Image 1: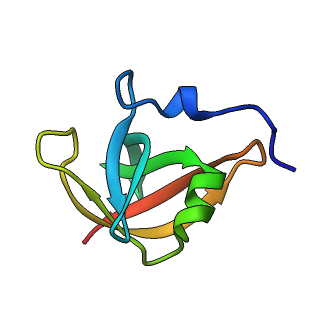
Image 2: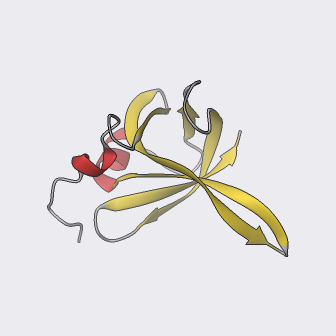
Length: 98
């Protein structure tokens, strides 16, 4: 069961969050390109962390299109490949470059 706390403070664009578009709807969250090692090769894995309630309201799911606007870190178009709710009201969207 998700926590009932107000998580919006963690996803405030005036602090450390990024405003993006998911399936043509505005969303706030934290975009990251974390280091990953796959089969001995170094790479980065783009991901977007947001509140589970916001993801549900938008209807985000696998194959949703996420756009990071020009001027933001990671600007570009991505496709959601997996969603991972963490059980606390937050979901991580694993992305691939579209």
